[in-house]
Every structure is written in C-alpha cells, then in structure tokens.
Picture (cartoon, rainbow, N blue to C red):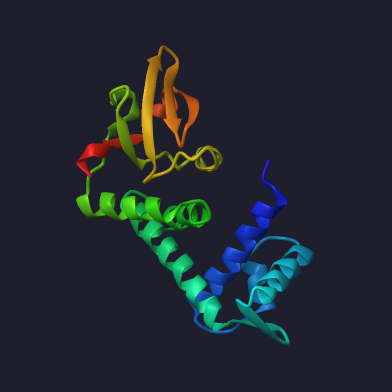
Length: 200
C-alpha cells in the first residue's frame, strides 16, 4: 500500500513537472484536471511547495519561483530521458505513462545508466538466460500490463537498475536488487531483458 507521504511527493513532483513543461503560470483548474487527487490533497501539496519556496500563488494561478524552476527542470529532464527511452519500443502514450510512473522512483544513477543503454542501443538477453551470480543492467521490463509494471517498479525492478541472478528454480528465478531478494515467475522473468554489467 502506498503511504500518504509517497503520494504527497508524487503530487508535488507532478505539479512541478507540469509547471516546468508549460513554462508559465498554470490555473488550479488545469492542475486538478491533470492530477487526479482530492481537492484537499492538491491544496496541501501546493501549500507545502509554497512553504518550501518552490511555487507562488496568485489568485487562481500557480507559478514557479527561481528555486522552483531549478527543481522543475530536473524533473522534466528525468521524464524526457525515460519517455525517449520507452518510445523506442512502445507507443507514445505507453512511453509517456511508463515515464510518468518511473520519474518518481528512479535515482540519478539509474537515469545515467538508461542514457548509456540508450546510447549503446543494446537490448540484452532474457533474464531466464542470464548467468547466475553475475551482475546485469536491466534494459527492459514488460509494461503492457500496467498493474504488473507498477508492481515491478515498486519492487525496484526497472530499466537502468543493477540486478543479480542468485539462482534459477523450476518455477522461476531468484534475483537480488539493492540487497533485496525476490522470486520472479518464469513467465515474467522471460520478458525482462538484462545486459551484463561489466560491458559498461
């Protein structure tokens, strides 16, 4: 279950991204149409951003402060790297959705790894075929099933992340990501692409 603090972080980052993309003040009405949360949650997020000195409010409009512009640029940049990466294998809409979800979870290191993967244009091999006790870089995960995609992202299984295959079992694969171990079903593991980490 997603914690309220996580939802608050996501909403605040979405507000900054929208303002950064528009490059101008945006009405509260527009933000409410774009971000599907309750009015009270939206106002709490705006209030918090205002206290942090990232936005200013003028009547029914919200704009970015100088510090807000810096934060928004970083979020927009991260979103564009992810969206461009996913556009290689997915429709524009799917790429946007995937980037929209991932932008809240990925670190700068993961973004840099994605840039490297994108530059090298290498797909990797199926996780099922990847050798045990070797570190690899995830190059792709299944995203057509959005619930599965969300679940994998919440586990830390995402493009650009370092993964290690601990063992293969008849039903699937035991993996390690960020010192956490998971067992993946064979049908899911087949769709995950991995590139040997040493190549980077």
